[in-house]
Length: 527
Image 1 (cartoon, helix red, strand yellow):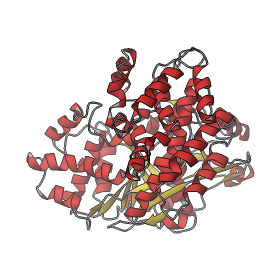
Image 2 (tube, rainbow, N blue to C red; image 1 turned 90 degrees about the horizontal axis):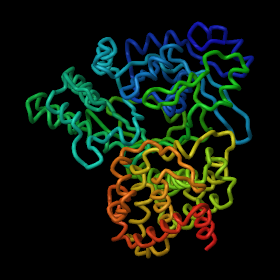
Image 3 (tube, rainbow, N blue to C red; image 1 turned 90 degrees about the vertical axis):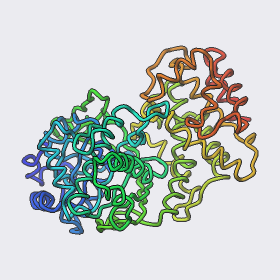
Image 4 (cartoon, one colour; image 1 turned 180 degrees about the horizontal axis):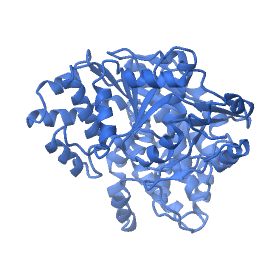
C-alpha cells in the first residue's frame, strides 16, 4: 500500500484494512482549487494535518465544498520536500481513542503544497497568484506562538525584520515579512477582501498576527516602499479581518507503535523524518479524538461552512473567554506543570505521569482549587466539565504518545499566559495570592528544570526555548531576582505579586539533593 495518488486508486484494498477514504473526486477538487483557491494555510505541521485538513475533508465528503486547501510552509521547507511532495499531499490521520481503538483516515483535502521561499521562484509566483485571486476567502495559520514575534528575547526588533522593513515588499526574507508581501500583492491587485485567521495556541492570536503584518505595512508606507493606502487596507474591516480563535487538539510526534500498526497493514514509507530544524513528521499523523475550534465570525469575503464540521463561530468576546478558560486555567497550565515535573522525574509520556498519584493530585489542585475560583466562564463550554475531561480522559489516554519534553518547548513564552493571568486575576478579584501554592511550585520547578539535571542527578537535554541562552547564565550565577521579576516571563513581577519569597523557598527545597523534587511535590500536594 503506497500513499500517493496512484496508490489510493484501489480504494477497496484500503477500505478492507479499515481506512476511511476520500469520498470526493480528488482530481476535480485539485483542478477547482488551482483555478479558484479559497483557503490557504501557513504552517504544514501535524496540527494542520490532523485538524484543519480533516475539517476540510469532512466538508468535501459531504459536498459542502468543492475546493481544497493549499498549504504553505515558511519555516521548515523539508516538510514539503520530504513528506508532502512524495505522497502527493496525502496523509494518514490515526485517531487514538481512550479505549485503545483507532480510526484511520486517508486525508486528501490538501491539493497543493508550496514553500514560502523566494528562492523557489515557481512556488512564490504561485503564492502571489493565489493572493491575487478573487476567490481567496481565508488564510489560516499554525506557525507557533513565537512565530508572530518580531522581537528578540531582549524585546528589540530582530535584524531580519529590520532588513525587511528597509527592503520593502519585493525583497522580504522573514516568514511574516513574506506574508505581508503577499498581502501587499493582494492590495495592489484590487484591494481584495480576505480573513487572516491565526489558529495558534496563544492569547488574542488575531491581534498578534495583525500587529506583525501591520508593522511591515506601516514601515513600508512611511519609507515610500509601499503605496499609502496599504496600511489603511489592513485596518478596513470591510476588506481585511484578523479574527481571534481558540484551538485545542493534541497532536504528538509520530509514534513508533502507530508506525508499526500501519506497517502491519502493508503501508509503505512510514518512517518518521526528523528535519534539520527538529521537526518530527511522517506520512501519518497521530492525534487524540477530542478537538475544539472556536473562531470569531468575521469574514469579509465569505468562508467555508466549517460550522458543519464542528467549528464554533461566535463573537470576539466569547472567543476570548473560551481561550482564557482553556489557556489560563483548564488545560495549558496543567500540561505545562506535567511537562516541567515530568522532565525532572524522568517521565517520557504524559499519560504515564497521570498514573502517578502525586502528579495527578498536582494538576487537580492547580485546575480545580487554584484555577477555577478565577476562571473565565465562556458559557458555551462549561469550565469544570472541560477540566473533568482533561484530567479523567484526555491526559491519561495511554494510547496518546505525547511527551513532557515536547510540551516543555518554549516554556518561557508560555508561563505568562498559562499562569500569570491567574495570578493577576487573584489580585483583580481581591483574593490573597497566599492561597496559591502549586502554581508558585511550578515556577520554582521550572527554575529547577533549567539546571538540566533530573531528580536522580542525571543530565537531560533542555527542550528548545528562545530564552535559554539568556536564562542559563542567570541560573548558574544564582541571579534569580532578575528572572522572577521579569514580567515578560511570568506576566507579572513575582515580587509585586507577593510570590517571590515562596518561589525562592520552593526552589531551595527542590535542590536539597537527590529525590528532593519528588519529596517536595509530595509534601505540598498533601498540605
